[in-house]
Length: 157
Length: 60
Image (cartoon, rainbow over the protein chains, first blue to last red):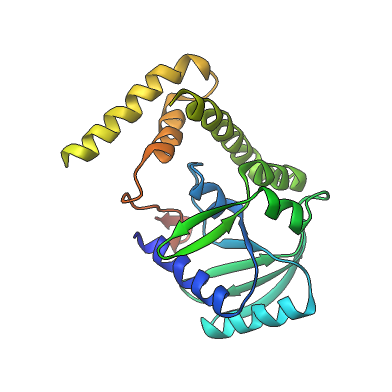
């Protein structure tokens, strides 16, 4: 496993320990599905419940992460971080992307001995396009290109 | 280079050449990276995190 996979596995173990149901989104989710991108943080989509917020606090405590909150284009984000790891929790994606809908289209990707639920590239594209951020323009194209190539490639292989 | 790694890279290049005419709008370098990510075996390390090592300086 690469150092990045080891970090992700540590995070997944702690999420499992906190019994927090998550869907991996953002650039890490893109990268795990073949999109040639890199990132500085790991983003998870979670249901917005009081219990889940407590579980996020438990997760952060387990990994000794500092918690902060911010409001951005997708609404409230809870950021948990230390000098090595930055993990964000978002409660909303695009306007029509409920947790259950995104979950139903997601897939499980194995990291070490654990499975990580990862949002589909189509949902990741939709979520990014709804944000309308300038910095995502190049990323949107490369996600779309990967979806196209993946579709043809799996047929032709 | 490990012969099996070389074989995989050659396969990626072969697919890139084969699919290039279907994706004329995708730069060949990007197409090759996408195909590499789709083809590469699980034993190849997955890298996706960047670390900031100074002002505007990042490393994988």
